[in-house]
Image (tube, rainbow, N blue to C red; front, side):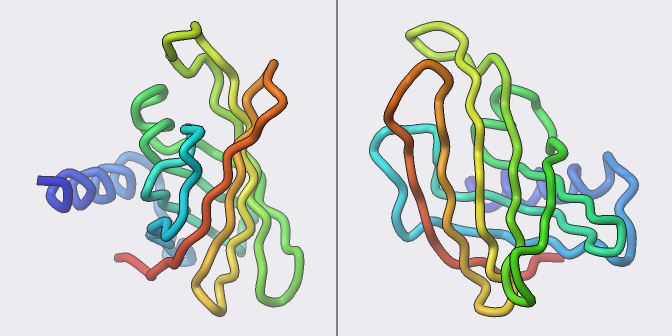
Length: 135
């Protein structure tokens, strides 16, 4: 069921927006994700380096927004992209929270690290894992 769900979600995400030939889809799975929440076992980055555009989809984005959201893409080195995005009004038992995310994607080694900072709280959540090219 989960594979079917994510496969359908990836297909919809690609079809719902104007995907370009230059867009590369990194499907990333966490080998470690914090028990503090807000970082799930899977995140997908849709990256178009020609246009310097990134879209992000994970469980928090899907549950809050329902579709990939745009983030900020910067090149840290020849191997690493930095990706920043924010999800507003994430529903929780404590009320709606704003979460700011940052990921470093090593597109050569196909690995990533990620952190989530929740507005109004000192703790942050971290995750890391491996990625594969989808498509």
